[in-house]
Image (cartoon, rainbow, N blue to C red):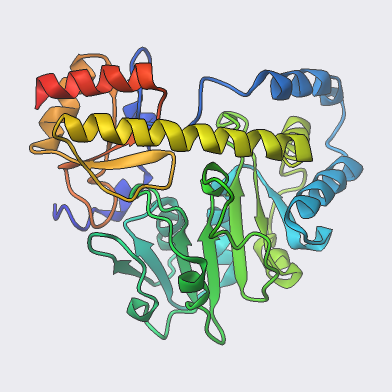
Length: 344
């Protein structure tokens, strides 16, 4: 198989597959083992709602809170069962030709291909910077991640806005935007008629098992995304978590966490570089893209030493010598670096 163009069925390989139980996990981009104590208690307090169907009033309150967080109105917010649900909805927009910016998260391409949508990959060569002119003019749907997984590149908002064309919808995956201090290149606060912004709450808030997220965009596009959607698409705890994570105190907590991530990332880059590991930069996400010789063997040897890292040959445009590692605190990072010194 061409390492720059994986079979589309491989697009559903994600980090959780690499993170086998018992391994020190650098493969999954989730902070910690579970939500912070204040959020955990909020969910415990909401357990009493599980005997009732999810309430419309609770869903509207959560949408209002998300809207307030981004300076929008309720009709511009659609709650999701994880950001990935938003990608599964994209075929309902009925695009004739979708352009996927790669290397990037592969779930959007998988969902579009499975639905029979014509997909064209726009491959970015290192340093993986967006060139709006590289996107085919005939594409009526464009999907890009910002910051991009797994390259950790943060694209300027101006470059993403330059993708807009009459008759085109631009979808921005901002699953990791809240991990960037100040969210400087986010489009989440912009109400635009042709832009959808997907947000995940599962990474920074460690809610991967609960599946929480939302999409921001014009009401007309959000209505198209929901055609055929099941009734009660989110459970009561998901709705409560989305509301809780969008309240001012939670947003302030996430901003402090972003500062911690930035410091940990800088320290981790320094350690890896000193050990002779090639780290792609400048990195702005809570993960790093590495290039190592004989990457598959390195990954296997690290697993034998009890460490999980993410293989990257399932990302279009990358090969087996690329690995992705989540940013972790210094003590865990030293374990990874020491192991890499031994296996390289």
